[in-house]
Image (cartoon, rainbow, N blue to C red; front, side, top):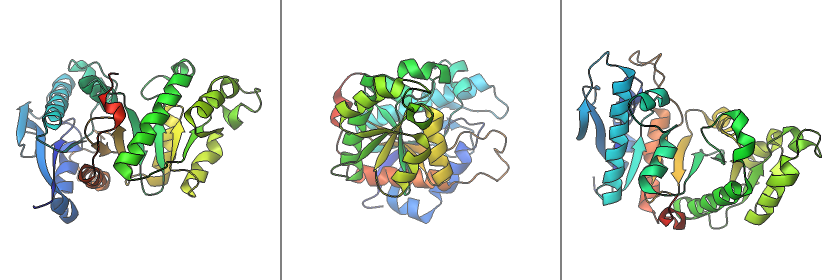
Length: 304
């Protein structure tokens, strides 16, 4: 349709609910009015594809599913980088299958960063809350070492640029979530807040660190435009409790918009008709809105 954004849409793992939520979302009237999809994925996954990356046969192995998922991501990124599409919306992948298929990445975010050479940040966004992860897919025991001042400052810069360029927030108000209970309670429960987080927040020009049990509530009440979370689960739990089914994963810092739904492959319910396309619909609509106002982030031109 005239004015519709041309977006690459990957099906994700063909064993999961990705193909069916993509199919259901593309049938939504709002989506049909807003986007022109280019569906990237394997033939045989239950959805007619515009750009095939191979053949999927029901009952195929996890490694085959992961290889096809990885190929689709590579192809969709190539389309976006060439200008053939204005953005990218990705269906959910299985991380173990992706690895078995020959792609040693813990998730989309890291793979997209490697394919583009961009410094990126993982934003989960809804109408109620925005959360950005300073560290992403790593073990909890590895978080304190990875949570450096440089990581916090860089994530804040990428977030600020992304909220300005992609969301139209001229002066983003950012807050840093603490790592330890009660923000360390003056060092009783850890010294990372005083030693690392507070100096980094000052250097980045953002608020915090604020305790996790209050900072997300303050953001939902309008005090902050986004909260920087120190590790995956504290941030993901907050956004999913606040907005599960409506939240969208956005990769900030890329040279093109990329969004995805806030859920995984749900292998246990695939094919049962129980998959909810709401988050995929939200991801498609948000990507179209970002594409309409897209200005490449300054961070996107810097090598990772």
